[in-house]
Amino acid sequence: MDPSDTAPDSWELEEDAEAPAAAAELPTAFAALNVNAKPFVPNVNAPVFVPSFLQASAVEIRASDGAPDPFASMEVAETAAPVENGGTEADMTTEEETWEQKEEPGGGGGGGADEDLSSGGACEGGAARNEDEEMMEEEEEEMPMPKVAPALPDAPKKEHVNVVFIGHVDAGKSTIGGQIMYLTGMVEKRTLEKYEREAKEKNRETWYLSWALDTNQEERDKGKTVEVGRAYFETEKKHFTILDAPGHKSFVPNMIGGASQADLAVLVISARKGEFETGFEKGGQTREHAMLAKTAGVKHLIVLVNKMDDPTVNWSLERYEECKEKLVPFLKKVGFNPKKDIHFMPCSGLTGANLKEPVTECPWYTGLPFIAHLDSLPNFTRSNDGPVRLPIVDKYKDMGTVILGKLESGCISKAQQLVMMPNRHTVEVLSLLSDDVETDDATPGENLKLRLKGIEEEEILPGFILCSPDNLCHSGRTFDAQIVIIEHKSIICPGYNAVLHIHTCIEEVQISALICLVDKKTGEKSKTRPRFVKQDQVCIARLRAAGVICLETFKEFPQMGRFTLRDEGKTIAIGKVLKLVPEKD
Image (cartoon, rainbow, N blue to C red; front, side, top):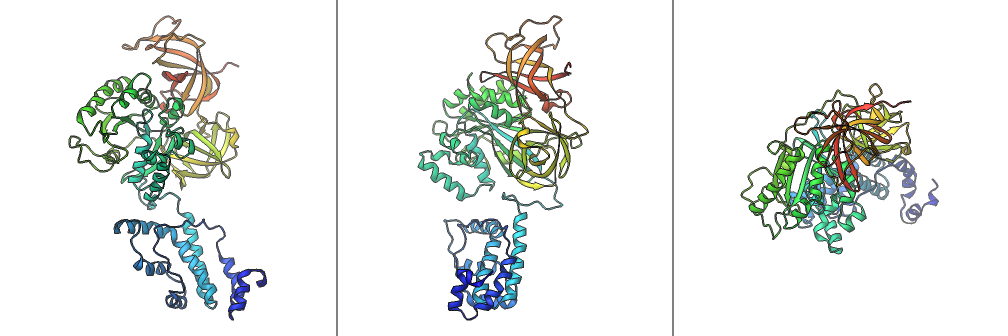
């Protein structure tokens, strides 16, 4: 590098006598710099910056010592720094800790380069600093992006639980999700303040919490979730993934995709006068979502009675009991056991009342707050030794093919060979991200992002399944299933078309034959073939899909054997796969 080419060197030549020595050392200093460093993120809460020439004396002492202490310059400044943002001392210290981890490369490295140019002589100090800087850069790169405390290597892995938030449109699902993320420290106060300002500009100040989960512009403008939002938080014992399902009836297919990945559902209902009623009546989504969650295999349901702080409700026990009385019989009919599977609790998503801390205004509720209750739930039983089954929810291109999905059974590790069904591509796992944190292996129940080798993104569709090569999942077009007709005005005959939602797959199907009716009470099958079925009847039918789909019988693998049939934006039937019919050649 020619010294005359660069502006700084010519400035130095005019002003500084020691410039030639500094210029000669520059190339070595530059060579040691880390080119692939992460972009610098400015810290708003940083202590006041004290320029290096004011600390000159301290700098000289440190330069003679060799490698500096990266925190020393920060400490000098910290004493003079006023407490900003009106935060308490405790807040500041916690902020500082997290920021120091991030700030190291900027603080240690930036200062180092400046001093090196200005002093010109301290070459060894500069080299040591550069090594330091490189080590810090490497450390920073290894640190995962999300602010989850890195687990100790020997610590047992926390159990992964996927929670889906369901309920009628505007019940407050996204707001509760955003509030939980704030309370567990996954979203910073500063970010929320920014959202609050932006929401105020649009005259939507009560929506700011939901923006933590509703990330795209359309969702924010209309205040309606469209896609299933994802986020995660940790408690002492468990690691939770929040799946924020859309409440609007036009986006129920997305909601089914979210519910099919969940272990636990949170049904959010609004206690506000009139809102609960619209959500619960015939056309409302409270009923449909509860039923779809049950069909998707969610065993445990928490009912959050939200908006209890509303002036029309004001934490009233009567209103809470009224909502409860209406819901319990319906949830019982859907198949939840009120004593074991359902837990009711009042809360307020906007103020965060009863989510983390108990509330004083609500003396009649004696149970645990929401997050504490989630933490106290018993563990889910999952088989680690089963065959690998990972239904794909979504896919995109990012330095290769990336797929998203929840691992239903089996374990996946890096560099493992797997087969993509139903098109039987052999793929290799290049890297594994569990909730955006890179790992080497994954166990059932985790939400994964996998980078695959050996398959193009265009060749994958949501609903495809990753399997272990020695135990492929079944695929086909024709199958026999037991169906319960839930809601349909007229009769259903052979030749009827509907949309089948099974695990994450959506495919058009036709009922090709009705085999027999099943008596609801006794389970007896009729001897003759029915000519049609109508609402509230149970039948066994043969269904034929438009394309090849992956599925298993309900008996062998429940998660991939239960399905819903929808038509004209309504859920018509739920069912389970009894038998796969081989194709006739």
